[in-house]
Image (cartoon, rainbow, N blue to C red; front, top):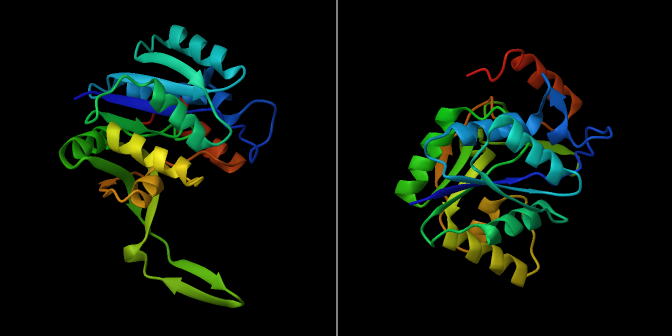
Length: 229
C-alpha cells in the first residue's frame, strides 16, 4: 500500500494580507510551506508528495524541492479556484490504486508533529480512513437570534489535517460532489456526504492552521531553531 501526500497551496492568504501568500512567507530564510513539506519528506510512511499551487508558486515549490532536497515531491500541479478544486487536480495526477492512501494536508499547518502524522497513516491503513482532530477544550457557545446557548463540548471536535482516505473512495466522493455542484470545506465533509465512514485520529494543539497575523507571530516564536519536535 502506497501513501501520497496532497498539499493544496494555491490560496492567496487574504486574511493575513501582504504581497506574498502566507504559505510562501519566509521564516529563518525558509518558506512556511517548507516546514510543512519537511514532515512528509521525513516520514518513512509517505511515498510521494504532490503540491497544487498557482502562479509563481510553481517556481517557488520547485526551488524549495531542489534547495531542501525534498525528493518525494514528484509533481507540482495547477491549483484551482477553490481548495476542493486544487485537491481534485492533485488527486487526478496521483498514480494510486483504489486501496492506496491519499493524505490531504493544509499548506498552512506547518507544525504537524511527526507522530500525529504516522499514527494517522497507520490508523487509515487499518480502518480505511483517518481524520486528524482534537476534542474541544473550551466551552462552546452559539448565538441563535439574540440568545446565547451552549453545546456539549464532549461531542465537539476541532477538525484538522491530514485527512487520509482510500484513494478510490475519495475520488468517488469528489466526483459525486461535483455531479451535485456541491463544495465542502474539507475532504471529510465530502466523504460523509457520499456515505463513507470517517474514523478519528488524535490531533495536536501544535497542528494549528496559520490564518491570522497572530498565528504567524506564534509560529515564528516556535521555530527559532527549526521545528519544535
